[in-house]
Image (cartoon, rainbow, N blue to C red; front, side, top):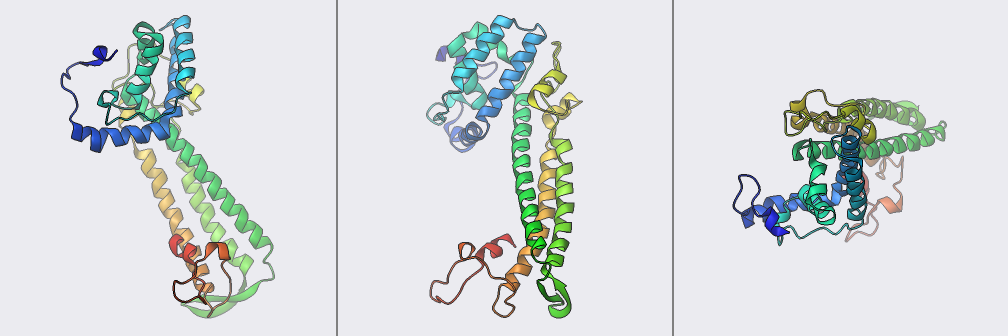
Length: 299
């Protein structure tokens, strides 16, 4: 089996051990842990599309999909340093597919596709998972703060400006103010979904393909709102990730504002709030202290 992969295209030498150790192996191992299921999902959708379009036969598609089911059972991360010919997650999965089905069948999975648009698609799908998980965290925080606000209508204390007591407010009023900021943060973050959830599959290496692929169909199967319109943009764009991270940075400013207020109010001098023991640490030499280290890290 290895002889079939000895030379690939123009490359006739094995990759340098230093490159494997410090670049390709760490990337491959990370991709294997984070994107194993994602790659298999994309493979299934692509094969179904190829069969739908008559680019490959239904029998070939069936054999590939059954083999993919077998591949999904083994999640062992290969030793990419000891086996540099495995190269990355894509080639490892392809080798396993060909090992099960043979080259004539397994080799057809990659028809009308490049590692470029495959990788770009996986990145967007993985970003989408993280996006939705962070949305859940955001909304859990908002619900928690609303619950506290509803129970704090009569919690009156002095509001401060310039670190001086100014006007009486309630804790509910304070939390409502922070929630207004978090709502704006969430709206900015939610808007980045529009940039994330578009399908680059079909861009191939950069110039698309002459095969009669159906990008709307793969978009539907993979849960995208639609395809990226330009094939160059399919493989070159990463602005969606920057957009999401930028809005998270803006959201962090609001969280820092909240954490700083609570941090100050948890001091004995203010005594407005007390941090739960599960969210505090004691001094190494002063047992009377209760350090609000969770708020320190947030702010």
